Image (cartoon, rainbow, N blue to C red; front, side, top):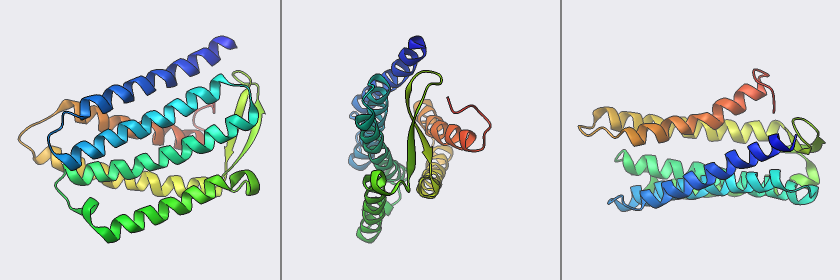
Length: 202
């Protein structure tokens, strides 16, 4: 079973390195807002994968719970970065509108408060020790988790629509952006598939 643990850690550690590489490459983008948005997406996604790798590597239960919460907070911030990037890349002005920015920050802070208070109320998730496929802290998402995740996935979908529209109407096609767009769907597809019982939680 330690092989399975090592595999999980390796996958998330590798994703952290890839995110770091993506952030470094994104610094070459000339347009300021697009560069800031994409660098933030990669940095925040890498923060989430790093906390997840550490979570699998340790056996300290309370630390694993807080790593999970921190990872969820950082991961949710990546949604805002993705919206910012997509708006800038597609030539929209949504990311520059003060009212929309204040609304986004306000909603984010509400979600953060829910996540930070989860150990008291367990509204977001409940944690338990699982032995499959190795001994680790597992999580059962609550209704609040699905509400916040649903809003996040919907936001990602809208932003991805902006990007697809921008790419299809552009004379310059960049296959690398296509890869980034496809990869954004992976966590949502896996999360929903697990929630529907289509794939094993492991």
